[in-house]
Image (cartoon, rainbow, N blue to C red; front, side):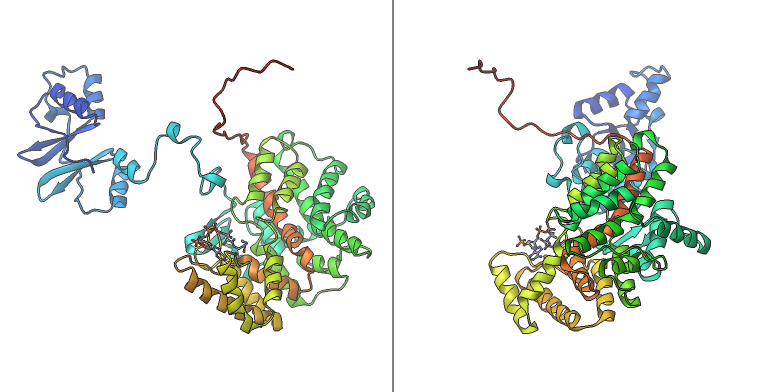
Length: 498
Ligand SMILES: CC(C)(COP(=O)(O)OP(=O)(O)OC[C@H]1O[C@@H](n2cnc3c(N)ncnc32)[C@H](O)[C@@H]1OP(=O)(O)O)[C@@H](O)C(=O)NCCC(=O)NCCS
């Protein structure tokens, strides 16, 4: 609060009250009688009086003040003050102890507590990496790190992964609601129909696949796909045309990835299987064998869990490119590029590499201590947003347990040891497994080769990226931030040419 409060008496003139406000540079004056609060007079009241063409030297405060105003006690929490100010549209509240006025809480005081400053002062002053900066409004979902919770269009992502198919969640993201039985069947049939690569792309793919890793091949292939199918700038097409392109894209991405992998291994691509769901078909096209139901379901659950996760780097990239009005292919190519960086994709294979390096459960303790002594990070642990259990990791641990096998038991033992050692050597940091730790275990157990871990993530995440492209395009504004210049002061004279 601001203390002491600026006060006047009810019988003072408006001119006296206005001078008191002006002198103290405040927007209100508390009206007291023998120290007790009897009213409050604000700038708004002065405006009303001026509009009524009164005479400020003659009119009394009593006539224009708010009598018996709401007050706060000195021990009230800041959020109570905030609630009272915002719900009543007040800007000032007197603070009263016993029956004496001891100060005023104003919106300006609360902005100080919240470290909110006027926009002009804060522009160019955002945290490095835009951490925590809100850059858009979305109805697709959000991540609540403190609660260990995230959702897609109001539905817990974990619950969706437990109870729904990938196609149902895909439909939820694209169409805005969970499909009923008929809509689910027709959506699933449509995406099955659209899994095959167009002829031009499948002819070029062998040459591409010999030259790069599957994610790099996907990046180039999506570019070709857009050209071959004649995708037009999002700026020039309506929502229906863009949604149709997006369904076709997401249906064919797993086919491209599986074919790119097989061609790189010197094997023929496997045609999509018309009777299998999206995740099972992906495993089938990758390995050439129909997967068991538990393996297909495990990968389906992994893909549902990772379909979308806030404004991560690749999702934001897709939205920035869309904001220029570019076509869907351009946005997705850019997103794949962002995902390819080791700080974004890539941790599941690193977590598995670490398990290999540890080798046996009894070596875990020494391995983790040595790594921490050397200032290294333990792969698959810690998260920027989650400071409690990562909900994706909890579900994937359960999925891994159901799959069973020696790697699962070993990884659980390493998890327990690592959490204990981290708690001992990094107390208070709240380091637990993140999605990547058990993702690697689950994918490996289901027969996905390590180099396909990040591509498999992309096979599901392309649905999230496309959803963001559609949302951005639907109410677009060019994303164009500013940078603060920190070089030598301009203008410098241009040196004469030699
Ligand atoms: C994901 C990650 C980058 C988030 O990090 P962050 O929120 O920026 O956390 P910070 O870098 O601020 O770290 C906070 C503290 O926890 C420690 N810490 C965080 N993750 C750690 C990990 N995996 N192993 C060991 N220590 C870790 C940091 O060393 C730091 O300790 P300090 O206070 O002594 O300096 C980080 O946890 C990490 O590198 N994890 C390993 C890589 C990984 O699994 N990536 C996949 C993420 S889904």
